[in-house]
Image (cartoon, rainbow, N blue to C red; front, side, top):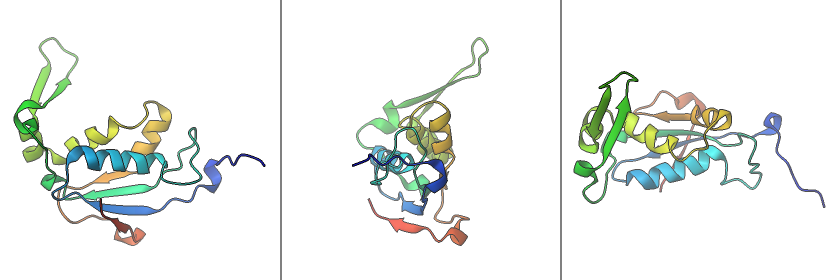
Length: 142
């Protein structure tokens, strides 16, 4: 019996939408990273981007457990001396909820060319509306 190896030409991609309202950030991010990578499919191949397209709506209503709102800090550096910027999770969820969810998912994807290709199939929206109705996405509950 031969082992099946997926090729990029015969990958079957589907569209899924996830409503993140009231769900913990880490649980949503891990499920999304799992599906972007394609590990939920029987035809998973590690060196091929065989994942699906994921749409996350209501990113501004995602929750963090414990004291993470005050204690979790997101860092960015401009590359210049004194260019370190610190933002708490509370600030991120109020002003930049899309970036917060994208960063959580990006941290769970492989780094390199393959991970960047997987990341491009993620679409995050702060509100309940998205612009991918033409693709007829399937709703997933976590």
